[in-house]
Image (cartoon, rainbow, N blue to C red; front, side, top):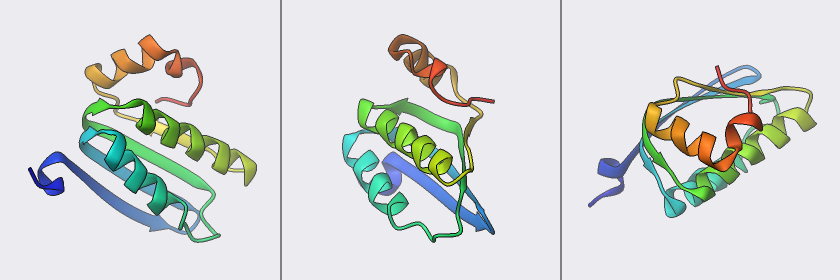
Length: 105
C-alpha cells in the first residue's frame, strides 16, 4: 500500500498561520514524517491549525506530534488548535486523556 493511499496531508501557510488537513491513518511512521516536516517550519509560523475531518486513526506517535506542535506554538506566543475531530479519533483522545491536554474546537 502506498503512502498516498494511507495518509493525505495538505499544508497551507498564510503568514503566521499553518493549516494542516490530515486524512487517513496517522501511524508511527507517518507521524515521524509529519514531525520531521514540522521541524522545518519557517520562523514566522506561530499558530498551527490541524483539521482532522478525514483522520480515521492516530497512533501515540501522532499524539506526540500534536503535543509538540502545542508546545512549539505556545513557546512562540501562538496557539495550536485541532478542528473537526472524527468520532474514532475523539475516542482515542478521551481514552488517553489527551482531550484535556490540547485545544480542540
